[in-house]
Image 1: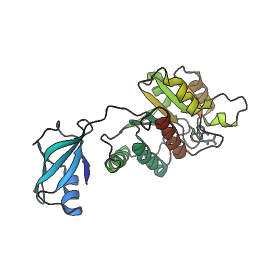
Image 2: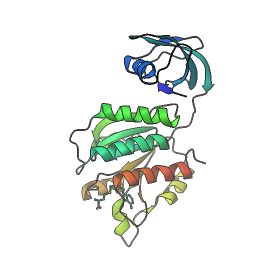
Image 3: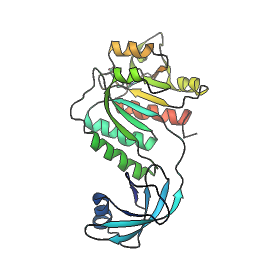
Image 4: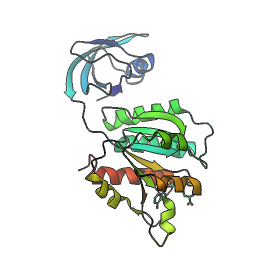
Length: 249
Ligand code: SAH
């Protein structure tokens, strides 16, 4: 079944008629060869998944009518991924994979060693949307435009931040805990908004690391004895989170 995300739709209701945005209309008519009477699934991130039928398929206009809800909108919320800007191809991989894994949002970050050139946030949003459609998620993680790490820390909108601290890997005194232990330790306090923080290819610098380690709701964690690339670190950390305290249980 084809699934389309309708980002700016009004609230879904039985019988509601909608004209599709031109891109999506073209996709259904010209690429997928759908005709009047064919059924698709649609979601808007708020009202669950709905069955819809094509009621008009023209060169310029494709219209659908909603039939009924097939899945309710899930209440649960995954963690937010805070990711430093890195090389485009790896960043795109991260967006796709963490969307599949259930990240609630993705906040792009500028850090001292991030590679901030040429980040096309709109393209990243499209990748998240396509991954959500493909993976049968009923919402699309918001991609938040890059902010400086200092600014984010000053605002600190999260109850718990699991900070992938690769330096700990080399330390004998084990300044940080394995991520699984940190997750289990915070589970009792039931943080309502958690985030996972992963640095750029060059890692965090000393000042950033010291600042992060000094904050009460930031939990420095390690992801094993090897240095992972940022994409591997993001995917592994999200997997651990979902398995330990998230929606894989
Ligand atoms: N260039 C850096 C490595 C950066 S890896 C160096 O050589 O030290 C990119 C990011 O992935 C890191 O900033 C960290 O957030 C995360 N990461 C990688 N390996 C990790 C590990 N073993 N434990 C925790 N975080 C890790």
